[in-house]
Image (tube, rainbow over all chains, first blue to last red; front, side, top):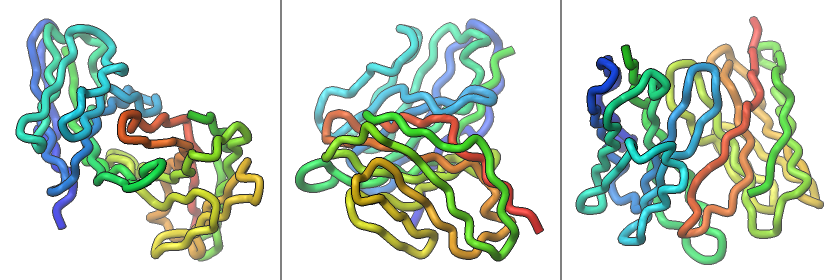
Length: 118
Length: 112
């Protein structure tokens, strides 16, 4: 079946502009995650949506970053007033809901949006 | 979530088994061990995960020690396409704390 789809695959924009990144999760997956990976760095958690629960926003680096998930499916990550340090690959992942204690559904990732701020 | 320790890099000959170690000495009883890999310019790819028992799927085998303080990912017949960064992650992944914490991983180079 189709995997996690992200668009655009590449985005180049000028400093100070706003950008929107889109994620289409795997159909039926209730959990959706955003991460980012800066050049030569590991993946950094940004935000996590699970069903109708309040999202875990603990990884968002500043109030310029926000995300929403409409209808429990598609998600949009918005970065306002972009800065050069926002340049990174932004990755989206989704997972099903594990049952019982611990929950063990793995996350499946898209190939990311490569964001470059000039 | 427990931290993990992995070697920075490893080499493996094509066709041979690749054994990637991971230490997670502070793992809790409700934490799973996950393995992902990331091939250049792609998103991380889920490989396998386990709690206590050894696990095997079409990609790899996961061997978890009895005390659960370490594990080994085994790629039985490595190919050049297995060259990637391999991440060992320990996570509870409950309904409200779904984030994975990625370390620097092990860069596996499969050589002809």
